[in-house]
Length: 246
Ligand SMILES: O=P(O)(O)OC[C@H]1O[C@H](O[C@H]2O[C@H](CO)[C@@H](O)[C@H](O)[C@H]2O)[C@H](O)[C@@H](O)[C@@H]1O
Image (cartoon, rainbow, N blue to C red; front, side, top):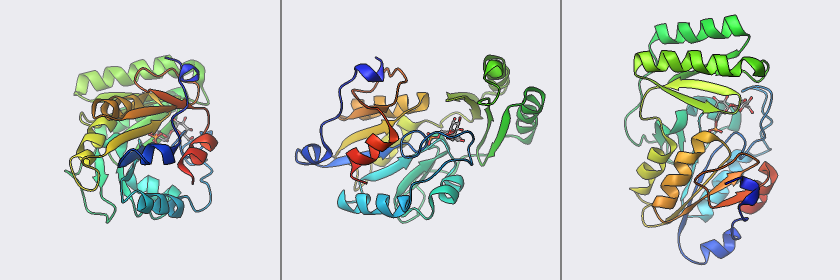
């Protein structure tokens, strides 16, 4: 259903009055506005501190779940003293920085070279990531379908997964899934036994919405994109900040 046709979520205070809630937050397009490139984002002042305060008020039941690597997330958002999953959910750490689950394997260098060659030939922006590599075609949108199909062919030949997002396709190893990250956090304290709520704007967030709903909670889709699995919607990043009381 189009996000515009979904109702807004109940106020966070009202939700918290019904019992413990865990919030799982996407980053790009949810906490920060989409920009022309991965390093052009404008991170709101003191975002890390404000998320830390929100996490504290929720008894630690807050986690970022991003397609960015955790190293990259830290470079942009600053030191995050909250639970977080990066690389589309494959890298997971608790608020104290201890790992939750295994560290993923990086991509084979030959795959990275093939993706870089596609970027060089097409004018796409190549983003090297710790456990994946992405091709951003925001500056060459007409080449998006061709870039995506070349990346998909490499993924299929090498047992990898192509993650599609806003003007981007990325190859990752199987298992990088935001729903799996939600499930992993929900198995342990302080998340277990609470109602999970996943907030995100992009295709990869659908796994998070579906898992949150399956576990008794719901998803909140941000922006115009049609969502298959969210129950509620908010229009903008600013609305997300207001709903969270950031
Ligand atoms: O799961 P997220 O936290 O939303 O991360 C998804 C991807 O975000 C970044 O790309 C997107 O945001 C860029 C900056 O606004 C934008 O230029 C790009 O078109 C978007 O696709 C990031 O660069 C990727 O690595 C993340 O996977």
